[in-house]
Amino acid sequence: MAKHPDETRLALYAGDDLGWWDGRLLARHLRDCDACAARVAAFRRTRDDLALLNEMPPEVHWGGLSVEMRANIRLGVEAGQAVAVVPARLRRPGWKPSLAMATVVIAALVGWLLYFPRPQAPSQDPLQIVLGATPESIEMRQGESALAVVHAGVQDVRLTVAGARAVQARYVDAETGNVTISHVYAE
Image (cartoon, rainbow, N blue to C red; front, side, top):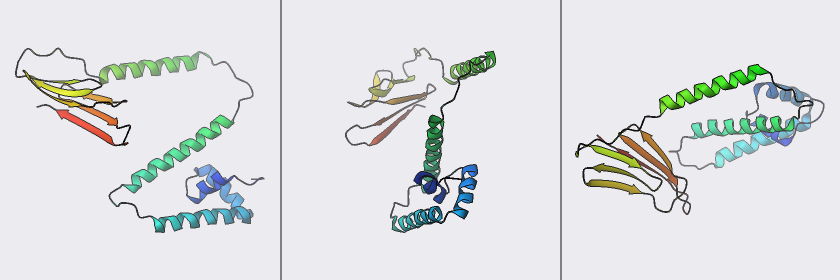
């Protein structure tokens, strides 16, 4: 590398979060550049010092969080590189990419249609349990009796219907930031 890498690339290299090829190129530069090697060593010391001060709850699965954060960092770096590159000339695609895209869309549509269950007409049996979901609540009815879990005053509720026997609602309370997950199962 003729010029020095930026701080972000050095920090990613120090945390072993740089891609394989970029890591090899940067390692080659670090063999010849004492200033960048010292900066990487400082990043590693800071990381080690923070690890010693870390007093996080042991019940949190840190390995999974670490993997997710590394993936997000790599995705951000790659997205930044993709945005920085401006093609010199845009070429008009031929018919093959259009055919490939149409195939993907058709496959996705068929998968979507097969994945989601078809709505079933409620049974006339008064002892039959019927589950329902609205943006405000999820409920279970049996004859004249009903049980409803109401989510009053929340926005962005995620409802999931798993067949005719389970309903799930997930939402984040805007005031407290608490996540609530409600499941209703019928047998």
